Amino acid sequence: LFTPYYQADSRITREQEGTGLGLAIVAKLVELMQGTIKLKSTEGRGTVVTFQLPFDMKIDSSASCDLLAVSNHIPVQWQHLTCLVVDDTPLNVLVLQKQLQRRNTKVLTAVNGKEAVDIVAANPDL
Image 1: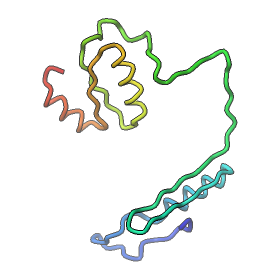
Image 2: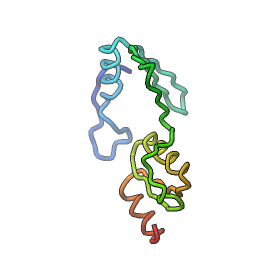
Image 3: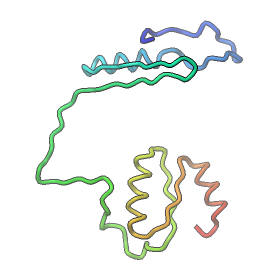
Image 4: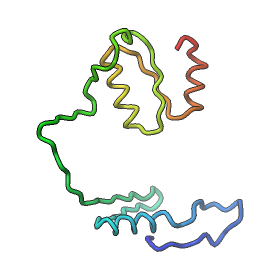
């Protein structure tokens, strides 16, 4: 599964998608970073690919970091407002959503521009 291959069926109507390079590229990157990669496949259900990468984490004992900590940079006047948070990275949305909700701000979320436009169209007072 980690060997690059090409699709034998190059017709537009083929049932399989992709180039067949994804796992080969991932495996090579993991190898270059001295990591490990594992596959768990269940017929008819799918495949789970996991990898682990070694790294040294430098921790500054004088600094404390809580991703979901409330930022004091959110103005008080934002309370009781509704905000639309748009980002395609779920963690980014979650962090900002939690910060705003802790300031009593109602939060709507979207993962892309089209979804954001649809939400604004459905909520003209946003």
